[in-house]
Image (cartoon, rainbow, N blue to C red):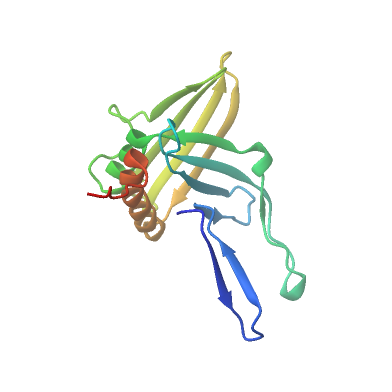
Length: 184
């Protein structure tokens, strides 16, 4: 999850560069065009800013089409995405659901409520026993109550294992950053 660059030699002795940008994305397109994508980006603490995750959700824009070499993959509407900032405690809430310590986000199960300027956002996550996994939702309204964004994403049990590991590993770094030993 750090911003490091690795270089690996190839068979032609050229170098291929990989850049880890501290993010992971899950894409669930479907043939109806009603799928979604969910992306998490880790931001370690810097200066006086606490560490956090940014969670982005985008609705499916186009369906996959074609076949063979003329195949076009489904696309997602990242221009109209919803972005929420997840604090240390928000990440702990996600872990509590992923570790089955509570059935949904929030102390009352109604999600996490965020206010950002002129927008109100509710971030939901609950165990989905019908489809096996976890349903994540983002609902955003303006101050007049008009819906700006509403989307849902089903995290599979396999994806949940990875997401739980990512949140667990990030908590220490969110709170304390990179800790180095001082010379004695």
